[in-house]
Length: 174
Image 1 (cartoon, rainbow, N blue to C red):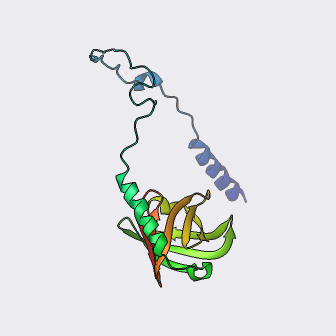
Image 2 (image 1 turned 30 degrees about the vertical axis):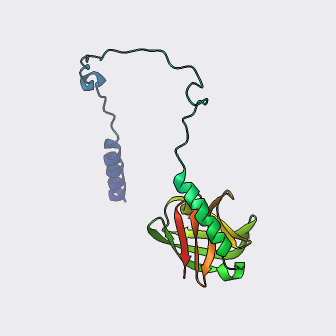
Image 3 (image 1 turned 30 degrees about the horizontal axis):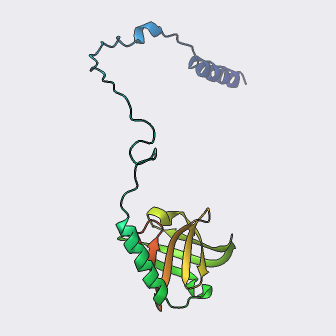
């Protein structure tokens, strides 16, 4: 019995020995002071008055020729689009978007004004896809906030073509 007490006391003593406090002198660890560096001269001038130039505090928008061409292409697709039903959209789709490929999954589970949908392996706007809905002959792809991030039209039995909201070409196929 005495042996057990002796072993316990020795174990406690060894564990407490590891808890000793050691004081450090913080002055011995201070870094040397930084040397002053030359500073280049500063120039000043008056800013133009607010609104000078294009009449706005913001720069002019870039020319939108690609967006105009995209709008014409969208109108042409809408005019020749085939009829589409929600039930025909349900399932897995291969997506081609701006040169990259990924997967899209569409369900009939209600989510807001549309149905739940999502993507895997997509880039850009399609990463935020949360829902979709059919509106006439177009399929609207929406983000989790309900904003439209893409529109596609049925161009063949198992193919939809359109673009993202930023104008990137978008195709769905099975």
